[in-house]
Amino acid sequence: MTKYICTTCGTQTRDLDAAPEQCPICADDRQYVAYEGQAWTTHEALGADHTVKFATDGDVLAFGLEPQFAIDQRSALLKTDAGNIMWECQSLVTDDAVARLEAEGGVDLIVISHPHFYSSLGEWSDALGGVPVLLHDADRDWVQRPHSAIEFWSGDTRRLSDDVTLIRCGGHFPGSTALHWATGPRPGGALFAGDALQVGLDRRVVSFMYSYPNAIPMRTSDVVAMRARLAAYAYEDLYGYTWTRNIIGDATARVAASFDRYLDAVNG
Image (cartoon, rainbow, N blue to C red; front, top):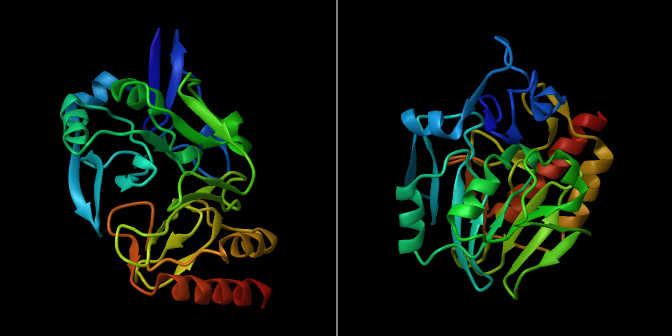
């Protein structure tokens, strides 16, 4: 029995006798099956030619795979009043990575924004001592490897502490989640947006897509609903899904302008 990892999205399966013909996450319109066809690896094989690198991204300690693998999201260790939160997940766990996190005070909770970044959530929870993994209930059917550490939350917000709130943005996935940290990592706070809000290459704007690889715009109604859910939260910085894709400074105003720009464009 083997837990296979899709090489396109990086998501690990449950124990199987043989690799599936297709990854359900990549067969969906929001992802894609590689032009060369479906391919799989394993945790052991991935560890033979990849490592977990740590570096500062903006003002947080972040980590991801080197060389780049699958979607190339980066995770972050957020030291908050709700405990040490591992934001987003990776396909590979290594002893060195776990030791580094333990040296930083450990991890109390894993929070993942949406199914494209579920990756090897069970491996990480096990390696970190069985810590809980928070996922939005609206996306529960996309979990490829059920695990006892998973805790589903529902509704539009989940307050973890005085400073930390999870916000259901929707749009990209029904349960697409952002994390609002009111007082950190810099004064003015930050929004960790996953793929719900996609930071542009100029690091001044965001945009909104149902499918990024297949260029399918997000429904206007979903963008309007997201704007309403985020309206109560201010943040100086916005952290996107991967390395350096961040808006550092004046992020609330830039996101507001981006909502206007998008809605004007799609509505003609």
